[in-house]
Image (cartoon, rainbow, N blue to C red):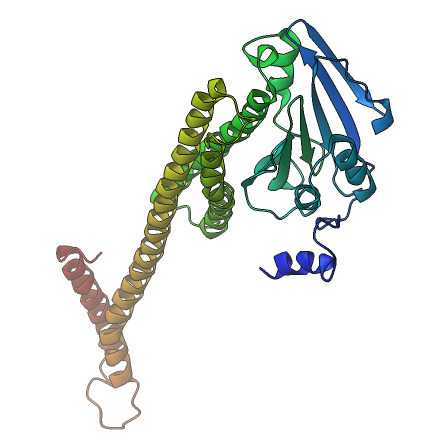
Length: 351
């Protein structure tokens, strides 16, 4: 929570709609990639600047903006496409929860996307989709996304993407993001199964750290999916003119997937709790076994210590002090007593 308010404090005192970047500082310049498509047309190219963008009449545009730290570029995009200032403010503020805002002639949809890197692991970043009558603009924080399958479908003309409007493209982008949630949850499920087997086999060295990491992944997924359920449900509002009736069944299916993600997250959280309890029980059992062993050893040595203590007293008139066989008899008695105690403990299944 402290991180959230620290980032939001950058815009303190500014007018609503002011573009202030609230994410991790970045030095790399933003990149612009445009896909212009139609039922019989496809063109993909990288843009050096927004001025290089030209869309033929009757064609649709998908503009992917990688990097939202350049507020000057965001202002140019907002001005060129007539995007609302409040929506663009949310683009620059990278800690928004999933939501959908309808501004009449365009819609802003915010969603969390998971990306993975070898050095940094898995993290969550904000993706905002600006949906207009003939365009979709996707804003993401950094390079790397899950949109390659959508790009490939557009390139090959497979499915409905080229024959439908921007609303269906926006649905497709949100759908692949949610599908990636299942990939993350499947990895968590496999890790939990492996961890449970390790706990049952007594390998407890790194259990706590692994549980903490898996719990963090589940918390991240839950925070992404919980508000998304409400956001997707809002897209089903028939008052949104930009969402066509033919797209509504697909959005309902997306909503079902988000609900399924939540169900899986809750189930896996229960599994994490169960494994944690099993781990603590295993530690307790191991400690009990150690204490039982030490107690038995101590019990065996109590009578031996008693005998040694008796014969260790330096009284002059003690019996057996001058007896020739006193020393071996005392040692033999100790061995016999220890053997009888061990036999008794085994009979009671304490050993």
